[in-house]
Length: 212
Image 1 (cartoon, rainbow, N blue to C red):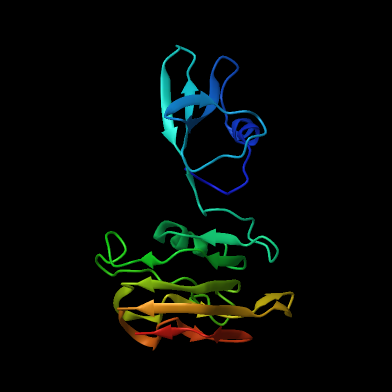
Image 2: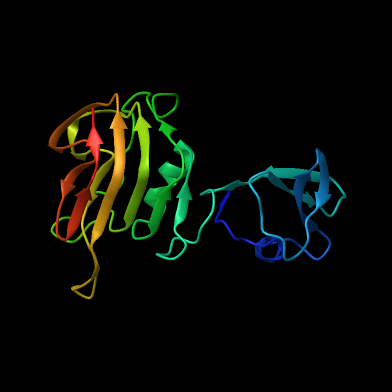
């Protein structure tokens, strides 16, 4: 299961559907020992849920934070530190992001088969489709080993399709990818192919980025 940063243990337990005779506890790792989390403690990346069924049997489920930290806002952007975090950008296409570490995509599973799945697309054209309409600040970090092998597809790049965020035909804010370096990339596509973005459309900008 995936959860957002800032989720409290109590919120997570309340969201679980269990019978009156079954219980669920959130457990975190503390000094190598598993301890019950407190209701108002934020979930960390080292965690699991332990569910006790009606027959007293127990089962544990691992949890992962989708991002290192943040709330996806301009004031508190989601923090992207791993390839797993980067892949989750596609789940919140209009949010704010900062990259906090170099990321290697030249490893499994990101470089296997068709490789990286570009973030954002316009497959619903002539509607707006599913573009990346957020702000991604690489903070001068590097993404290396980007591999895409999709010779029959379009909108091919780290980001497939970028456009400004629009609601009710009104521009809310422009889309940006900035301060980002791509190194040792290999990209194959049919049409609208780029390194940072395959298609950089309405009110979107790529600023101070480089690719080799």
